Length: 219
Length: 356
Image (cartoon, rainbow over the protein chains, first blue to last red):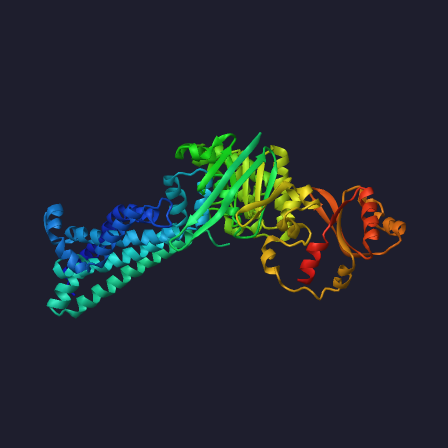
């Protein structure tokens, strides 16, 4: 491997991390409130709103059923509008966020639905309002599950970001497609794959450590 | 004046398939400073009833007045404020499992706008009251059931409530822990004058600390009054099962129609009467039964004898089978009554359950 290629791979790592982390952050900016609304307005939520829930639930399902590669192409005009170009890591963040947000919403919804209803009732009996229950009870008590969900999400987004390499999305996936697939450079292909595996392991490890540290439910 | 007034309260749950009338036309007054028990079997509607008292359940019909204020007329904000004056504890404690004991007790205070420092000081004082001062930085998972309930009590008392609702608060605890929790509640009642409403299916709990009791069966109050009076003269069928047969409500239905006919006492029951006597504190010291036998000159059969603590006073309870004809029975009963004992003829209910 030439030093130029090594430099390119280091840049690939940087771009993959950049896409994954920024997309996850923006994904949560949209997906977290979305998931909260799903959980709160659901049938067993603290403020059931059948109509609101049904609409959101439907939209979530539609967006979740679009394969990422299709979505990537579908939103190209929107990407062009927001970023000004349709290739490279920053442009890839747009479809990544759109794809991650409903996934995150579902993760958040299921985490919050796991919170013991008795504890919510106790908070209501103390006179807690909806926002107070969401903040102190739902998010507070579900935090371990939320972190596990985030760990799964970040891994999925890393995978998606690599997939975007097919259309010049940047990062390790892009390198794997260009050098490994089009030029049959096996050493670069293998290196990028190993690096993707290592990144995934690191995310998983960090996520697991945080959620174990956070969990106070064991004696 | 009653601090809690319930008027013609009904609650109906509707699902697609069926309608369940959980509460039917309940009226109830609970006096300030009282310890009021509501007893009934699971599914009788008592948990729904207690949730109507702070509007966690909204009644289908009827009114609930707390301190003269109709809960149905309050806005959401007013209701939430009022709830801070009604503490509640639960069977499963319902603590925040990811927060320390101290934070759990601080929680209601910070909800209502107390500063972190104020809340902390108040919470530490309350943890001292419930005997858990040294556990403030533990997490609920590290505590025993009894300790968790103590934390829940401290939390429920955080906003200086006037009323404490206890929903099966001792049902998940062993007998010894139940005792200590009941004594704690009694102590808090005596020291602060807080009104306590206790939902339970254990007669022991009612006997131990309640002053008044309501017996709930199938969504209705079938009997209510002073615990003493109901213990001495239960009127309703449910009341008699509770007091005389010593069955906790969950045993009521199971036992209906089952056979206990091979009881060795059965033959004598057909011969005469079965009576139940309740001794008050003083009469326990006199050998009244022995004297009665000497006076009348006929033996009696002691079917059951027990001492129970009713509201802190030891009450002797005895069930006697009286052999012989009506005249002798009459003489025996009037002798006992003359000597100040509460006598109740329970021939019918006793033979029914014994031979059914």
